Length: 435
Image 1 (cartoon, rainbow, N blue to C red):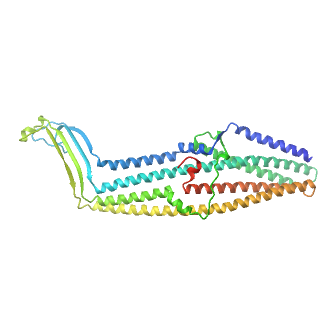
Image 2: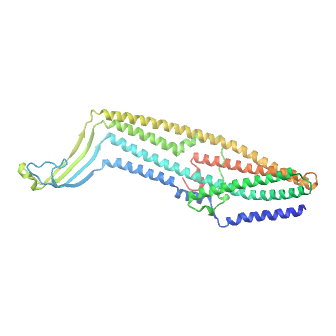
């Protein structure tokens, strides 16, 4: 009877495995590195961050190019009656060329520095967003790999639970077991079915998430657990918080922004300093505008080159604007300090969490080994007639619970170590996509 049940269970387990494996044959094996590369190329967040960086670069050039002459070519054609009056501030002319640029402008110099520093800040934000995309992709991939591995184990659990339920039903019909034993067997099967539903739901959600990240159809995504590189060991004596402060893109972005705001505030104060601009103009005048009647010496070709000097000595509104810029600079400085404190604290928490989760993983692994040994011992005792079928089933359920707990703890440890890699700016290199 036991031998027949064993062969039935074995063939049933194989059948269930084939039913799961057949749909996966059409899936496309997706290595982790390839998934990250596709996510970086398809990410809308990275694209938006790159657009912001380009805008900041253009703003920097806009400020810097004010030192280059701005040349305007135009014409001021018009008829004149009497004295030739001006058109939009210039004498009527056939052709006129105007050129102007900044020469000595302390305020503009600081505004250019501010724009350049903001460009650097946006570059750090782009890098930080890139690291976020890598982290999201790696964590989704690792979690999907965990659930896919767990699914095959759950199918084996289900086959064993169904076998046990069948055996208990036969024992109840023979009057060996009570209906309570039948309900316990059904409860065990229901728990496995619930866990399988949870695993399938997680797999579907994670595949859909990776599909949105990579552009690959969700139904054709299959992870390769071996493509996940081994994670480096975390030493608790290392100053990872200090390392994170030195390399963190978010901290650098906040510091650059604070520096830019400081330059901008100083520029607002220097807007009340003297400034010198280059100015030049050429005009080709016409005779029909009566210039020769009103000017003793008339020449059609006229040009002016020189400098415009400004001495702003009274501007209450500019004083108020500069004071507001000082407040913004102070706020940016405090935000940078808060960013440094946040990164330092989060990195230290991650470093200590890795230590705690490593200990928890060791406990979970030992508990699973003990439960597995207990299951094997119970099987031996049942074969020897010193243990009951229910003793073996209880040991099997405990071993399955310990296995599930071990998988959950392993992923939590993996998640903490991956997040710590991002904090120390080593995640991109670890994933094989460069910095």
